[in-house]
Length: 266
Ligand SMILES: Cc1cc2nc3c(=O)[nH]c(=O)nc-3n(C[C@H](O)[C@H](O)[C@H](O)COP(=O)(O)OP(=O)(O)OC[C@H]3O[C@@H](n4cnc5c(N)ncnc54)[C@H](O)[C@@H]3O)c2cc1C
Ligand code: FES
Image 1 (cartoon, rainbow, N blue to C red):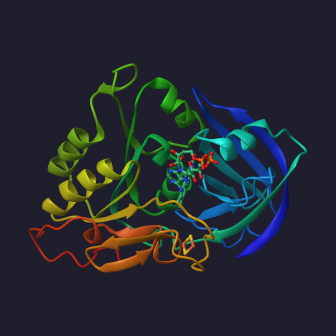
Image 2: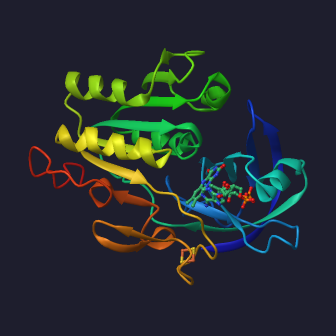
């Protein structure tokens, strides 16, 4: 884990209230994994706490880290005003990350809304040695503009929107059910609104498929030093910043899968 002042290379709007920030990092690059996050420092002294943002992508050859974020309040609003050549202080990489060290598996990645953030690196890692199906959902086409920044070559991709402005009208769950019925899937990994991830987990476990969820909780320190991100789970209390943010979905969904899953991806 590093603390680093990084030069901003680009920071621009990608549809609606969403932004993509690319920064140059010398220290954090090599150890960063899909599903991990960074605590980004806000300069405004009223906001003393850093803001957790997932790693969107890492380009190890060019020393570039990418973050995809939505303006929610003052902290993310400040991030959106930063320009190329400005400096931002980052702390990370933090947390555990998704399972990616697997091969010859058939994997499904489900990203909903801001939950698409960690899927760029996740898909990039998985598709080197596995077959990947990606299901992306959002409120409308603006929430899915970011897909243009993902390299989805060779990835079977399904898109859904609530308003039908792009892709299928509806949500990711009906597509996931179909995909699970028509394919022999080894693993599902998901990030998005909590209710969506619960439904993804339930649908996957009922089909007998191992599933990972990336949980979100408000964070103060990001490094296990407070209780800011403690959550009650079916497996006891967990700190999202340290034990997660990626968890076996069985900690949020209480169902008996068809078969004993273990994880065929271990
Ligand atoms: C592990 C992790 C990874 C994340 N990755 C991303 C990402 O890649 N892109 C992105 O846009 N956002 C991400 N978030 C959420 C992001 O941290 C919050 O939206 C941000 O901290 C809000 O800060 P703010 O100062 O703009 O808003 P504030 O003024 O602090 O709050 C504005 C609104 O955002 C809500 N909020 C504040 N903190 C969080 C939080 N941690 N999680 C959810 N809602 C929050 C508040 O309840 C309030 O409604 C992530 C959160 C976690 C825990
Ligand atoms: S944010 Fe402080 S313990 Fe997780």
